[in-house]
Amino acid sequence: MRAAMFYGPGDVRIEETPDPRPGPGEVVVRIDRALTCGTDLKTYRRGHPTIIKSLPSPFGHEFAGPVVTVGAGVDPGRWPVGTRVVAANSAPCNRCHACKVGRQSLCENLEFLNGAYAEYIAVPARIVEQNLYAIPDGLSDEAAALTEPLACAVHGVAESGIVVGDTVVVNGAGPIGLMFVRLAALSGARVICCDLSAARLAVARELGAAETLVIGEGVDQVAAVRALTPDGRGADVAIEAVGLPEVWEATVRMVRPGGLVNLFGGAKGGTSFSVSTELLHYSELTIKGVFHHTPRYVATALDLLRDGAVPSAPFLSGERPLAALVETLEATGRQEGIKYAIVPAAA
Ligand SMILES: [Zn+2]
Ligand SMILES: [Zn+2]
Image (cartoon, rainbow, N blue to C red):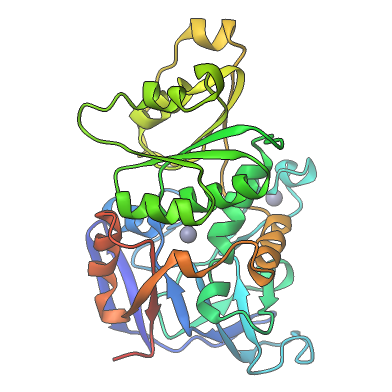
């Protein structure tokens, strides 16, 4: 089969590799659609400390398509050949301390799956058991492939304590930021969204943002956001979905006293940010990081897509062949489009 292999930062090659055969408990899926993701762009540019374990590595993690074969011990009645499926890119061990205390996103033995940018993929047994789903009728493969990133955003929103009537600011209108916009609006919040791209902010409005703000030279973003909140006191909840320390700092300054800050965007390794001790203390801020997803949120994400509560169309900007993978990832880095569906079968 043809597959994209990650050799190191800036070095992804499309190669002929052996077709995967299912080991015990595994399910092999023909990849109909694989979606580009900001994490893949970051990995392409600088590698990834947790997702990529050894080089060269299969690459890509959001996919959907039909089952082609199953391994020993897999119930063929549960996963008949031809069943369209979607899987998350990891599954927890359910044995470590983090898992036992209900924090599966922090599992010490998270098993990751890479290799969505390929014609076929073998889904490991642990993911088959916990995070593989048949795609509901009426939901396309490319829409279903949004399940994994949406599960991350569902986790993020669940940790943000949003209540009906809150003002929520979302910094960043990439795919994850836009998912936060939609989920916060569904939670009954009045949503303000900030981004560099007016085109992406138009999508934010389509997904329920009440206010949008184009960030640019000479714009005091913090003041502009606060001016859009009741009495200028700041947002009840501020979410960072960019992954830049300077945006983390600005996000902290956007909340009201007693507000919650969710620093969701993963920043480059080795970076840090600072926060005013006075502000944190006297304003009783809650500042938290949220990472990844858990099986429960994966299930919720697929339900939201099935029901149309999160529409897929605004997130999908077009289809590209596997050979165009790198230039497509680069385009998303220039804020062109939201997510693209890579079609491995296309020439
Ligand atoms: Zn992703
Ligand atoms: Zn665990």
